[in-house]
Length: 344
Image (cartoon, rainbow, N blue to C red):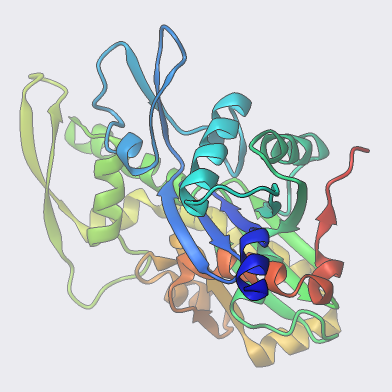
């Protein structure tokens, strides 16, 4: 009986609050929610119409009185009130049962986040019902999630490519020794595809179509056999819907700029790495996580540019939330990597 009562009281939550997706982990239960970070609102009243998958399905398809938005931009909060509501709704969905005690929440944030942005995350979580809020840098959470020995003096390098940011960090002794954080990720890749197809084929497509193209035929490295797919959009000249064949070669060209930004950031991070830790990275290689890391050929491209082993993790989308969950499960062990919620 007392064991069940303890489980009832223990409702601590880990959250990967991402630009594209929000994942929630509950202590003792694992990942219980994975939803797009999208909210649909009624423009006139500001009333929330839908959240998560239901709201994402409305992107680019809403009538004038409804607006589907992403309240996070480049890994940080762009709309405070909408983010707060979204968090509260996701926490409610994840918990399913009502709890007497407000949860402690651990949230991962980009390593390059400002103090003002940190405060916005903390305040949103507090207003969404958190008892205490702790922040952890995404690269450290990802490293813990894949089982890297972050507490040891040896160097571990990780690249986490999310929807809004790419985080590259060298981690040792429970801290980030050096890091590079750029606001380029999966969303910028989608925008690059939209722009390329508009410019080269006079075809207007939405972000969701671009994301589907990226997942289906997108690549960062030359393939053994190039592929094609049919893309539906709106002809800019005639204003009539049409179908256009697009090749992997074209999409690789479209993605050149955001991918080059990631390559440059990785090279910069390697230049900043202390020599002793650089030797460890040469031996162990670099670990890749995040949804953006699933772009075909990206590990091969980075391997070619760095001459280092690049290790793409299984289920890279879940590494950050699993790491945040491990921090939650063994809080005393990982206390050194988290930052307690306090006002400066």
